[in-house]
Length: 312
Image (tube, rainbow, N blue to C red):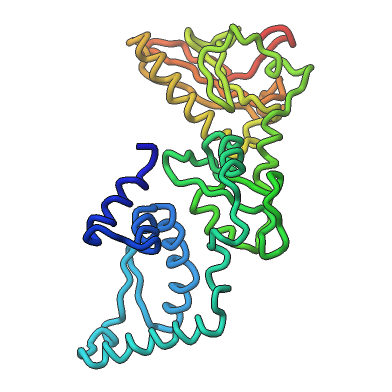
């Protein structure tokens, strides 16, 4: 089984007594697609909720929507009449706008070819190009940077991978190009100490950052986490890089503790700017193990002292 589609299709046909229309099968796929639910959860959270609350028609608390107490006391006939009015307003709006209502979600509106979608998702390396969340946490969608409604094309340069939440919040009025940041991740400075680190010195790494031992350790096991992109300090990191640094921090702490049970704590920090003690202007985060009885560094325990461009 390469996807959930096969068992869902078989189930729909079985439930239908041995037959099902394409629309019925598509509805089964839709019901199982969490990314669609996340999309419409965001829609419900924003525009309709704010408007209806402002007019006193609904109340919202901890994800539950209900009618105010004075409106909730409806008899069966009043409730049925209001439901019929809602259905009539929906039908009226659909008749006026027709297919344009859902056109921004329609897959048959010059659909993105499957091979192109695959290229976009591969280029994003399984992460939202806006917030950096992994596709293991939230479904990724292929988004047009310049929306189709504004003349955007299906060219690879106009496509980016966004999680369902970011895509819902972006709507079709924002033409921010997040995938251009992906190209900037490749930025290196040939004269930078950390851009030219010997690969054999890398202790642990991920796609956007790596860790190396500090040449002048405050304590045994003192390690530096360095973003691969040439960025001057911690405050210049993008969200995916912050996620990558955090991933390495946790992995390093586990690794160091597993190898040395005497470690009782850590200093984890960074210097940003000359006045803060930064001497190498490529962001690096210190992970410094501490043990009971350590003599604290008089400079505060977190340092960025690198005496020359050949050592660290």
